[in-house]
Length: 584
Image (cartoon, rainbow, N blue to C red; front, side):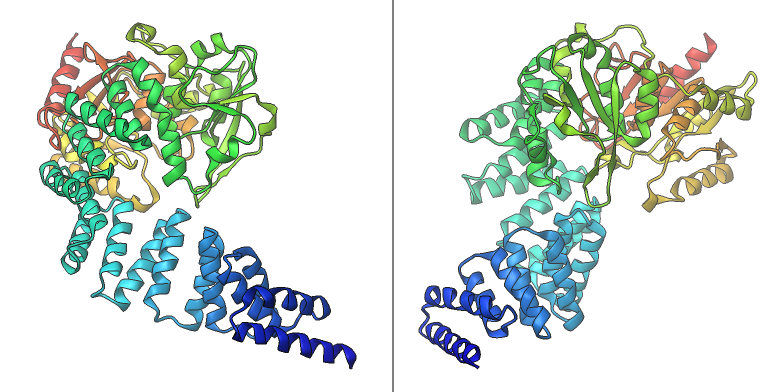
């Protein structure tokens, strides 16, 4: 009885302080109450709100969650939880709470907007698309709902749809600068550079101190194939303020133009920019707790235990493998992270080096099983060129085969193809990467090559899951309209089985491909390859050529389009060169 009386006095006293708005004095009293009765609803609910006001968000979350265990929660409890999780940038729990709110009230457009933002931060673009779409359905006349839906389309690389939606948002509120910026970005993505440049110039006047419009304007010039002007603009930006996007773009400009020393010094900015804006897991920050990472300085020592860090796609790793032998001469104790699909191929090709598998999970997280504490330093795959490729003369001049095939798979494919005296031309014409639309063509555009006599065409094209069936339709049209067959090899999964793809490429006599994984594997196998790349946007910086040949892969001949956004005579040029080669 005495305990209850004391408890009631404390609760009454605390409530009096709340009415007087003396919240700091209420806190210790409620904390004392909870030591007596850990399930006091008044203390839990009031403390949760006070902690929120004091920006003690984790304490607020703890109190609200305990309160929910005691009393059936109302929508306000979940809304407070969401605010706290949002303040802590805890996207996973935000998503959970927003979905709880939607179960109670499914007609709140703002909650769908918040849910979409959290899903986008977690890398769940499909989930964010659905949430933003629902928010737009609930409030179709609001700027934010139109803008958010356009933004998610932009991030999904659905640029035509994004442009249409963003222009709707702009019509509702023409003053929104970020919307104008994204409209310009969509225009640039589909090759409308002049229109994009016009918007960026307007933005430069509206926000003269902002670097973004200047950097983005320089990017459009780069996409047009220009060099001197964007270099000047990016240097001016960096004189005003350090900026990782500006550094990265300037690095790529230098590397594109074979100014390797200058390029490598700035190229580390790509990792910092990715860590800031794109990497949900913030892996770079986590890795730094284990060892120093050499981004753009020559900090590696010969006797250190060095881990080459997983960075991006399979093609870029295969490019990095072309430097591994030279890198290993300088640093004897190295290990490397690679995509799980490459592990067996790498171990067979470079048996003296340890390879660890990495798996990319759905939400941007990486799954690893190796112990990071074993290493002294780290360096990303894309940065090892700083040590071994400082000038053009550092590159191999003769074709170099550095991937060692699985002999059993190679033999199995050879028997199943049963090619005899036929000349097999492996074909790949699509890229599903972020800039894939600029590197890709339709199969019908390759008719000058596909119409050549004495060639048997073999399909090397893999498909992203969301695009399954597209290439089959293109091949069917080719048969119906032109009686040309591109044969399938159905015994391997072209996405999962990289060993099988490599063996399949090895069994081709020549390869015709756009810039994708096929090109890298073919180059690493020393296979005679005819690579077509766009002019400007979509031509990756490493597709340099000396006398028409790749300096990275001497067996690859590079054919570049004449103008941005148009392939022109590229496919006729390739057909003519193949004819000359066959004749010879």
